[in-house]
Image (cartoon, rainbow, N blue to C red; front, side):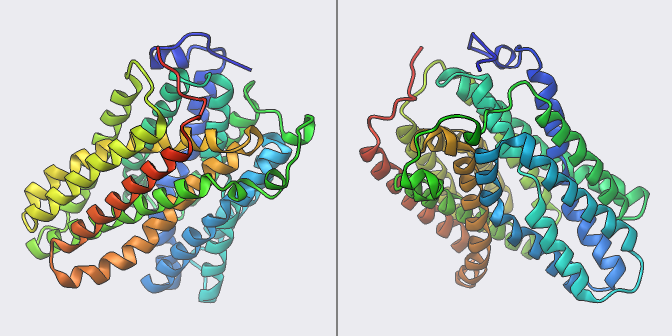
Length: 407
């Protein structure tokens, strides 16, 4: 199904019947993932009396979300309408249960276990929306604009979500945020499963099955290098974050971290809008390598500028601006590297690789920091250069990718 017959602007992409409604409701649901972290942290802290327990519960949630590609495989196989409601029901029930239990005396293991279960049951709204974009927008410029719009909106949630959580924490008990999150997930899931652009699941059509397809997207050999690239991108991003936090703490202005993160998020929104306005689509591996090379240069500049917080912050804004195009290109590339009935899973693996790399990079950057204030940024620049080389090598194996369209 193609919901849009013309390209050239974001307005053109969302002009199809029901597109704006579907996207808006999906973003309401995805707001949960910006709102929940702070509300969950303080709910568990208030109930257990321990920040360590609260951090363990949050860490368990984050770790468990690495299982989301399994859910995405179910979605590819059985469809969004059959899979998402079950995950959303479990997720909402757990949030409501945690909210009702908050304030009582319970074993610490309960909070950690519940955090783990929340991560396992979190519905894959982002990958599901991207799957619908593939139905709405044809490959080429339309798809790039659609993915750019999705990336812009997601980056906006990094600004709106923590702000909404702060309002909740300032006006009521932290557990109120859990109840709100449960409602948001219900709205977002309903918006997706009632959309006219829900992809037909593989189980409902005659799909030639190969050994690789039946065992999942990760078995596709050309996808794995892309995931390595995204893991390095995530680790590099974590290195920059740790470096900024260390410099800000040393300067006695820890609040500056939030300002720089917000500036990078605004940069990502601007970068996404700019990428959406390109008049032609370059080969995706070439685009990815150029974007990563540019990011590596900015990160190296931050290493040279450290420990000047102002100059580091200014140099990291371009890194943020390049992030949204990198995500758009990576998702587009993943589409071209797997069978159509594996694309939701492949998209989810891209996000999972990024998040996994971010977690590993945080730990490594903490160790590298012992070498000096510039070290985390140098670490990030080296990783991004390695990612650039990997993207170039991947390009040499994928020159016949068919999604590249020029206008």
